Image 1: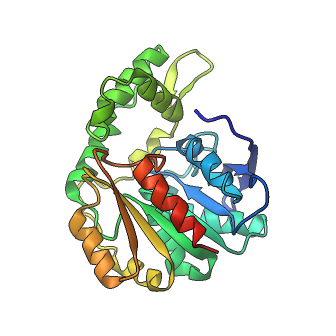
Image 2: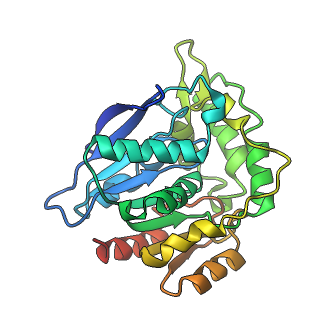
Length: 290
């Protein structure tokens, strides 16, 4: 975990749940628009606790949000609202509440889908976008793996057990880290939380997983890609990702010839974007953004 300067806040949505978000101030003189970071399906603000300070050090304010049902955000008593359109609406409402008309978006997996939705609704909100390991076509193999990984949600008795479970679920995506105990311990602290009874539990509402349709085919999202013709965009792909295929990236680039891309070798779904290959491209991309 990177030591960083940030403040914690909560925002109350129009339908009730409070959303937790972190505000990392720009280090030194501000060099551009703020960056909004959006995590994946079962993650939370801690997914960006290493990347956010790196971006802030470039002179940009960074806002990181835990979607409802994750981390310190409230669980939603109406589980059917656990859907990307709801989360996207929450982000737009948060932006309005803090009087932020425009930002650079960084979206990992589900956060990328949220960015797609926001671009289709209010493209003027997105000055530029970094889409991390997700695209308008989602590979079935990746969806099947995600459904399998979220099936086991029982709490454990120790952080050592949490790290072991984290390794078991994510080793295929990070095979080069197989023997890196510190990596798995840090990863576990990003996605698990210690409860009042001393048990270590995954930091999300299990009800949100039940909203995943296990029988429906992956959706066709190519219509959501159209607004990005006018939005500077960088796509990050894990070199061994099972969710975003090289063929999908190629088609994204065919439809948007100025698309910037980077592949992180030996990493699956999804890169943390602190990897040298990803960070080098992300830093350069932000240097060219508003």
